[in-house]
Length: 473
Image (tube, rainbow, N blue to C red; front, side):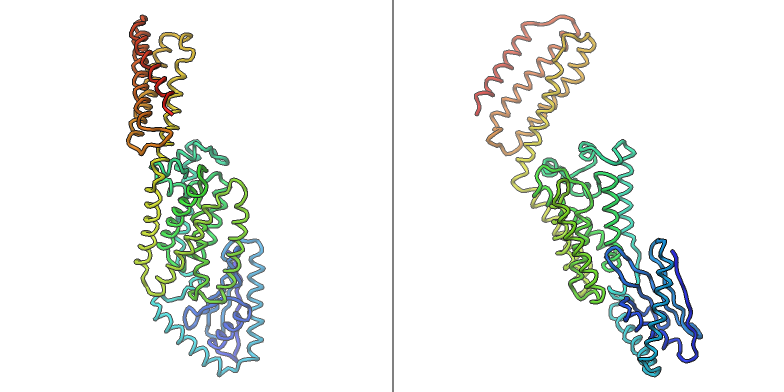
């Protein structure tokens, strides 16, 4: 990362007085700053949603102060911006020499440092939330870890044969995409797995970029574990919002959880936890981003239900985080956030809709297996003996057995008008008769001799069950 340094040496002012003039200059420029200790002032130039600003460091030396502007990211223009930052600071320091007498500067420096020292002891953390944003104190371990998990999982998917640019619906389903029919049908884990899957490399990179932006601001303020908990909890709630609002839509992506993180940060920006000089600028930028994103999400193919669910739950959790930080109850409120998420999930997943969803799922699966088994009979007479045996024994027999198991599962569910217990029992007898017919055909094919009487009897049972099914309304 590029940087630019300059030194101010003067016999007229002491290093501590120059340091105080520098703090006034940074305030005049609209930069954020904080005293790291009695001899070091650290701050950052103006920030925005897509700009992290430049880190400013001012250190008092024996004969003056050293001023440094350092880039926080790579940019071809950073060296010029760093030079301009230092030159602007020196210029404003010169202006402030006229405004502030030397004796006043010494008194202000001592009183300012004493106040800061007292605040640090009170917070027992060495820095306020605003300082952590400005100084970027603390690592971004969880932000980078979540980005790494998302990218790693997508890489594993691609290596397994999934398309890099356009994963298929069945591929995403296999890896854990969220879909109402399956999630409510017992595969609750899709609420979690879906927030780590993506529908293309562009989808992945866009989401990771926005996760990086919010993580750089939010994780230093709330800490890595609260950051991870809120990411997972808002992700789960956004998945629930999808299956509640969007019905049969397949949903993947971290955007619901990311909107949750933005919602959390917006909630914190409405409190006094963060200094007003930072708060209003960031709040304006984040709200513009959220409104634009939600409006863009109205087009087909974008899961706005997940975005909205994540945003609202994130804001609720954000206010809970604020209360926990204010009263130093981090563990209690983190546990409460997890408990709320579990409670909402369990209540929704165990609602009355569950049996109906499961019944629909079993019915669809039954139709697929019955179609596979019935298709085997097409063109059977044109096949060789070995082909016939393979089709009847390896394909048709297991398919009919699957149908039988599905009907057994349907019997355990609450019946619906379209599929009563009586109809399921008749279907069960019908499938048993089809299995017997299939077994007779296997024996006949192997022995090259057909037991006509046995086949006619079992087919009579099949036709009888089909007639009975037709009579049931």
